[in-house]
Image (cartoon, rainbow, N blue to C red; front, side, top):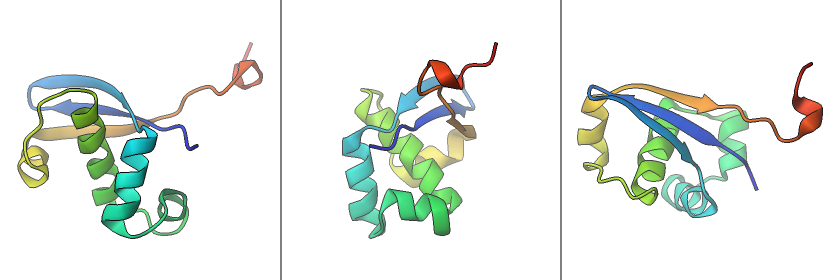
Length: 91
């Protein structure tokens, strides 16, 4: 599984960090007709990043507007790198 989190801010301020769950990953692949790993390595588009944040917010229980309308309010989105274990931490 790919471990991805997105930090989303809108015109209303920071909205939080959201996990890109397996359900979101599968929906991405169905929607964009490509594997998420392949998209991130070879053909990443900003639409992919925003779509993942939008869908992750939805599955986190947030009420979100339709995608294109939601984009009107987004001010920033960031892929959050997380530590995968104690060897990744610096002393």
